[in-house]
Image (cartoon, rainbow, N blue to C red; front, top):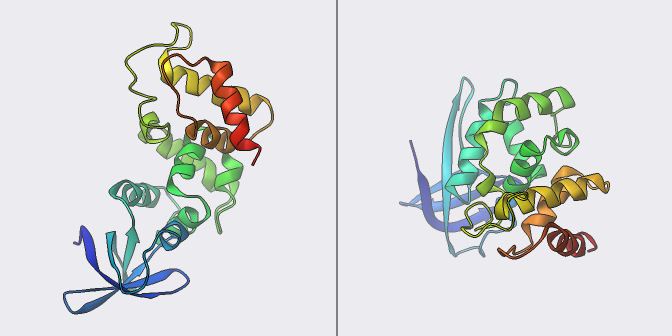
Length: 205
């Protein structure tokens, strides 16, 4: 029904914001990741929305990007996950971290969300893993670099994957490992060892 709402941010609550557009104050439920990135009250904001209709309510949910909204909609496609649960997941894990957790099959990270147990987390991974693209997780250029590092590594993307696997073997969770590698600006001449060392520096803080 609505693609996005753009207007003046007038109110911010625990999980809800109000955006005034067209002389209407739109009440929008948002995850914590949105609250952390909002402008000041009175400034303009653009929120991508998902309009959900239930027997007892009609509710707007809002996100900072189309990709994050798509992640929300994908969560709703998982059996046992409704809008409130999906919002709780995206409040516990930022969308990028959730994508990492799904691809790396990090059940523990997903199960930290309120109302989401290990069984639902595993179902979510099974349903969504094939829909998450590696380029949505790794830094820009990692999944599309033209110059390969080595045949064994499979290019820049391969180096990133191997670094994630190495960090996981060292005892870091798959989500922590992927997040650390994502912060490294990987170039075409970097080895797995170089990426691993750079990633460990991020994990040290």
